[in-house]
Length: 437
Image (cartoon, rainbow, N blue to C red; front, side, top):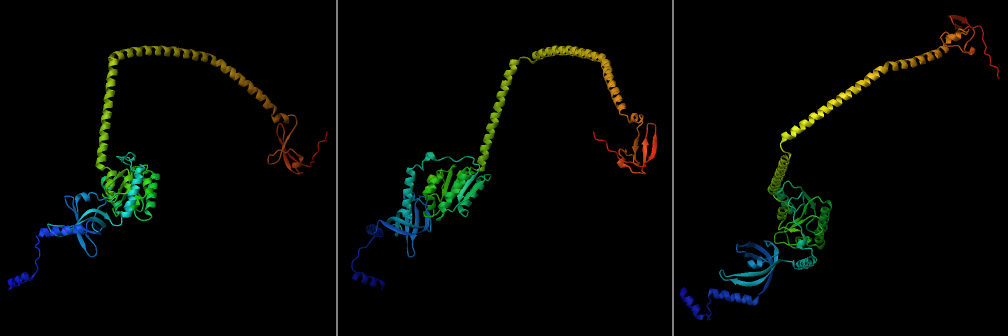
């Protein structure tokens, strides 16, 4: 029954060419080439993968459809960013049919992130301008210090890049102090904050190398690092600057201005700090060199001592001469001591002879002074006055009475005479004025 039906359809149907599968696929490919190519398409990357050959494969999709894409190694090597799932991109290429699977695919010849066209042109223009002015000159760039005292980091406090840098530094060089100069790395205020952080690091001069780091992102996310003012400030840095912005395929103006460009923030930290083991090995080498230098110095001093010993000759000869000289000095010293002792003895004898006479003279002078003072003292003796008929009056308290105004009638007094005392009683008294001249 089926065969009869098929035959009837075949008999009534118009004649059609019969294609080989490969021929049909080639014809479809030719039609696509003539009708569409080259073609530009915008969409979102999905299922991105890179084969060991270097070719990349992914799906380009939007809300209502998708198409398979192939990015061969040569075109992939020209990318200036790291393609990954979720990115909105624009591709240029050629539509074709992949014969082995009979699938429609887009062979990508160029790939860029969507919306970066104007920014990318500005980037290229600024790069050419600054390069012509010598800001990227390799001769200007400095090598990194082998053993920095401290490392500075300019980035956002909340950035993953800071965590990556600190982790790498703790692992490689936990002995190094790290100073963070906070700044926004994206947004309208980020350029001003990045410049302020750099100026702060320059003025404080507390680090030997400076890391400028940020994680990856789209061109517009990294645009703060394409600022001309920031670029000119970077080349004024008093210390070497390592730029680790974005991923390995991301490039900014800051990368070209830095003394060293690192593929990632972690790589920046690894470039700035040698592993602690390497530092210890370097110090060990210095210690060994110092020890060798010290030993060589000791050896040279020993040789010099040997030469001096040879010039001195036998020590016993010098010792004999020294002993003879010492004996002569000893004799001279003894003679000088005897002479000095005799001189002192003679002086003592002379002084001993003259001493009694000197003592007698001094005693005579002193006795004369005593007699003189005794005579003067005797003249002042009040008893001599009393012997001439005078008396000394005193009250009952023993106070001298020198004026009649100090006594009153009936007051008892004591009169001291030359040979004794009398008790007297005041009868009357009056003061008498001295006549005026």
